[in-house]
Image (cartoon, rainbow, N blue to C red):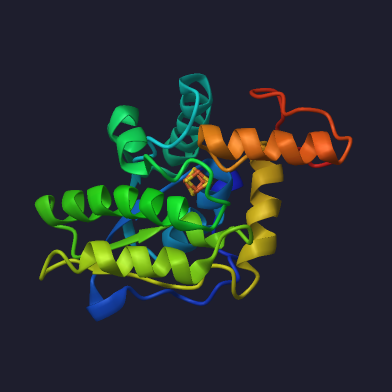
Length: 222
Ligand code: SF4
């Protein structure tokens, strides 16, 4: 690890996985949400594999950017990165009838369920007793909704548990932004699905803001 990634002064106290496990499967939605969590588990010597399963992200060009940004940081930290399916047809099938739900509503529950069910399945088949997600660090999300989905998916297997650690605490939220700026991560402007893109643009129109321009905005220090 080069000096940029020296974690000697990392401020979060040592993390411990549930039931004294040492290996973690970390479902990740994007680099900005994952950055702080990845540094936290690296500083605590938790052997972590990042699992990128997000068939909700639309369109595919946006999906590829978010995935590549996450992989770039995995490579920098020496984490294994699993590039799971982009099975968007299944995602649209699962979401059918919920297209007009608001963010944090029933559509999002189904979206989390789908992503976590696949993560828990991968954990079960690949000898990970613990999985977690990066989704909960964002203040835009309902943490209880995410954790309920996480536990529900883990409940399908006797030997897999969901780690519902609150990543926002102990400075996690602000460090997430600091790391995103330091790493100049791609800064997405909508949650991910075509409906969140539609609704964010609608809100912008109503508030005299410019439409989202995908693929051009990156965090920076200034
Ligand atoms: S708004 Fe976000 S969490 Fe909700 S369905 Fe769309 S992509 Fe999934």
